[in-house]
Every structure is written in structure tokens, then in C-alpha cells.
Image 1 (spheres, rainbow, N blue to C red):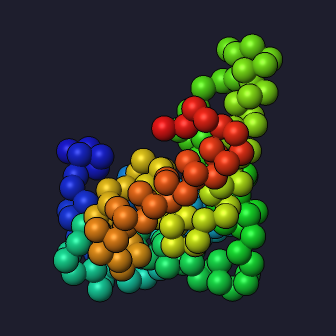
Image 2: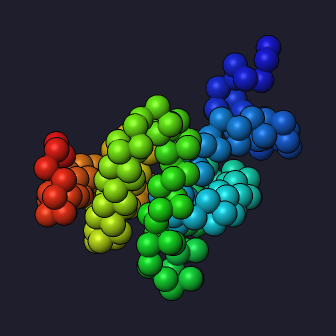
Length: 198
């Protein structure tokens, strides 16, 4: 049987017995979700890569302590989120470049396959750029808890339940934070003259 068809639980059992290929498959299955969580916290693709690598090393070292109370993915995402927050704190910078800045948002667009502006007229492309810059500015101005919840939700990788588990926050609170963040962004965009925003 191909290792790709094996469940996470079976792979964990194999990895605990020293099967490096089994842990490698777990990494392959969850690396995008782990990277996006780190990117949401750090805003920098390079820092997110480092935090993701750290998370996988820690997960491998702690594999024996995984009890299965939550899914392996959720357990791994919690480690990744904590690693990313530790990096963010250690830099002691909360500026836009290191948290949800343009670089991180552009990387999320690239991962999601955003449409190519070359299909638009120059005027439409300029208007899209202006809107994009206004959205980035609005996200930067959000309180950090709203910003974290929004960026994780917008990545499309996680359920509200997973975001809550990662951050140790009730699911209802995560939903509220995402809703409040979206409202604040709409208000900020309208204040800047963008009237066509949901």
C-alpha cells in the first residue's frame, strides 16, 4: 500500500518506531497549512519558513507525547502558531512588515492564485492596486487579535474550530473577531472613498 493512502494515525505510529519516511509524509501533508499559519502571524515569507521548520522539528521531538485528543493537524498547527508568536515577540516589532504586511499578503495571494492584472485595462489595474493598498493599510491598523483571526480565516486553510484550538480561544470568539475585523476594514475603506465594498 502506498504511504500516501495511510492515515495520519498510522503514520504517527510508524514515525514513533523510527520510520523517517512516515514522518516525511506527515510533513508533506501539512506543510502548507503550517506555513500559512506562520505567515499569518509573521507577515514575512522567510520568517514563516523558519517558524514552520522549527514547528516540524519540535513536533518530531514531541511525537511521543501526542495523545490524539485533537487531530494531528490541529496539534501541529498549535505548535506552529506558538513558534510564530514566539518569533514575533522576540523581535519586539509589531510593524506592518512583520505582521500582516504587504509582503505576507502578496505571498498569500500567490498561494491562492489571485487573478493576473494584465487581463485588466491600465485604469482598472491602477484602481485594483489602490484598493489593495487601502486594504493592507486597514489590516495593518487592526488590533493584533482581530488581525490574527482575520489572516488565519482568510487563508482558507483552517476552520474556525482549528483557529480557536491553535490560539486557545473559544470558537465563538474567533468568529466574532473575524466579523469585527471585516467590519473595521469596510469602514476604513469607505472612509477612503471606496464605496463599492460589501
